[in-house]
Image 1 (cartoon, one colour):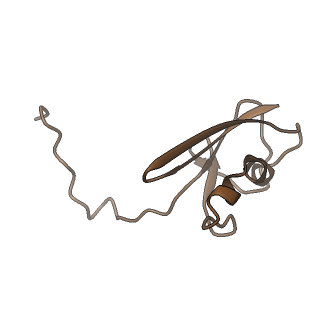
Image 2 (cartoon, helix red, strand yellow):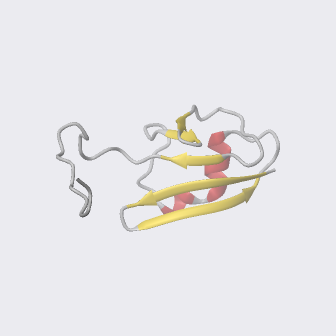
Length: 90
């Protein structure tokens, strides 16, 4: 089956389409993607991951067309950072 894997760094966004076995889990898809070799500082045991924007466990089964996402830690608390005003909005 075909799925997508998405990951981004501040200066780089990656979107991969993979062909994986029907029985593959979220962890297996990430490992097959090669992203852990490309970004060795990412640790799946501490990193949050999800499917289509919803947190999921590494042993979650996948369905055809799923988008696997690897999330980075939040570096700023959105409640304490002032919003930037968008020009033209009132």
